[in-house]
Picture 1 (cartoon, rainbow, N blue to C red):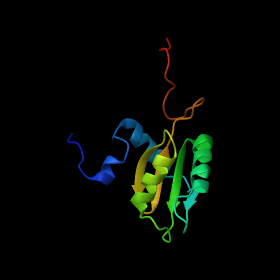
Picture 2 (picture 1 turned 120 degrees about the horizontal axis):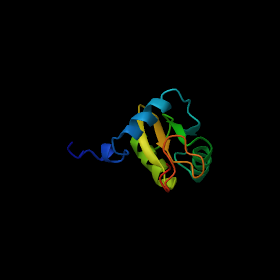
Picture 3 (picture 1 turned 60 degrees about the vertical axis):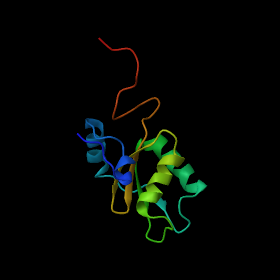
Picture 4 (picture 1 turned 180 degrees about the vertical axis):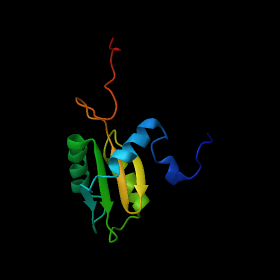
Length: 115
């Protein structure tokens, strides 16, 4: 599979069975975080960090009045949340994922193989 050259596509996590599973799970979610007319602020990043800790997979709605475009806001959100991956940008909605440190739902914890 060729490497994407579009910078918007490069920002997304690589295609994999995990990404497919996250997109399917995110389809039924409602946006938990909203980016408003101030854009991506420290308060929005704190709210996103808490939502990722609580839910692991979060939908973020980027309002039309936001000073950033939808892709720029999604990249700023990914950069502002350490360890987060941008799964999908669909319309003005971004889907972000960060594995829970203790109880992951979508991928197993790294460690010794169980028998």
